[in-house]
Image (tube, rainbow, N blue to C red; front, side):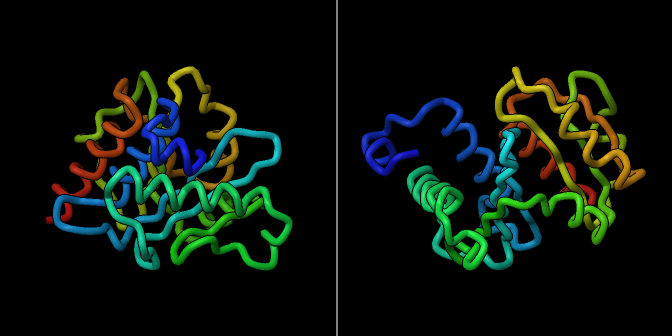
Amino acid sequence: MKRRDIDEGTLSRDAITVVNCVRSSLFTSYGLRRDSKLILYPLARDEKLMMIEGDKLRYMGPNERSISILLSMSAKKLSSADLLQNPESSPGITTSKKDVVPSLIRQENPLMLCQSDEGLDLRTLKFTENTVFICRVNRELNLERFIHLFENETRNLFRVKSEDEAEKAILLTNIEIDRQHT
């Protein structure tokens, strides 16, 4: 995402989908989900990632422009040489070239859900305090390679039926989590 594209409103469909996924993951109608962590993990050879932690996040609003600008700043950070010395691009947004996702899973032992065309209905699951939802931004991406990273890390991996777009699948998952914990 380039600042000019953000200002002119000419973001690609995939960029807008990522922004909507961030919004669905972190924001509610009344505020910010402080207990959420969002990991943007592109399936690329260099395995760079961005982690957004709701409890540390500052300066991000729920609007497209605010989210886009902070993601853009973080993307620039991923390509810079000083990434290892200063991984935080903005309060609450950390960038990394090393794979921290499996280590997070080992520490927190969450219920892991993976978006799939076939699988369980979300409403049949009992959500725990630590829930990870893996979804794809682009319907053409195959998540199987990514899922295999976690199959040896946890026994709590379930495929959930969701033919929805990623942002809607995240929203429906959060609704079900909220419903069970209220």
